[in-house]
Length: 246
Image 1 (cartoon, rainbow, N blue to C red):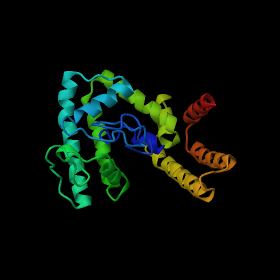
Image 2 (image 1 turned 60 degrees about the vertical axis):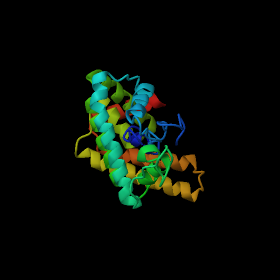
Image 3 (image 1 turned 60 degrees about the horizontal axis):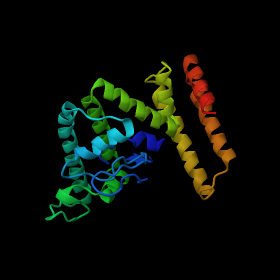
Image 4 (image 1 turned 135 degrees about the vertical axis):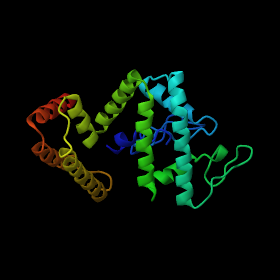
């Protein structure tokens, strides 16, 4: 679920759980991780390039000139917010290396490198980091035309459903035409939060090798709680989705 939640939310950075792999070196490696950290590096010369590469490779979106024009200041502002956040929590001013070298965990032109971004994501700045990512996603989506917005939403929803958890449930309900209400969401989020804590504890107790039966019991208990707060239409949608998965 972590992976799904963060997959795109860090357009220049990622989630909480979706490992770095694709395209690692250079100016815009994409992370398949969730919490996932999407971009492992920022291109200080043209920070829009990693965004373009991500949208093309993940959602087959080729930005139009108008979209690029609208996105450029958004991405540049994101980079500056990250610099400011890093300076605040690292206690170091942005480096300005000569000749493309690195100082203080930053790449060319003072752009944060992969390690420093990971420190922001997982350290005391995590909440502010997430807020920047959330805002970035909303602004990026708004800058796209309707066709590209639909393509991006389809991709993100697919990833959320793969990851499972609250995000998957929410998307399933929306696609079934029976979205969760504002009253249901916080209740169900609490159920999944408890679920995650139980799984974490089980992983610790089993030293990383949990009993599948115990995991199934946790899932069953969580779904039992969820079902109690769903409407009849939502229950049918949930049953249909789980039947399809199996």
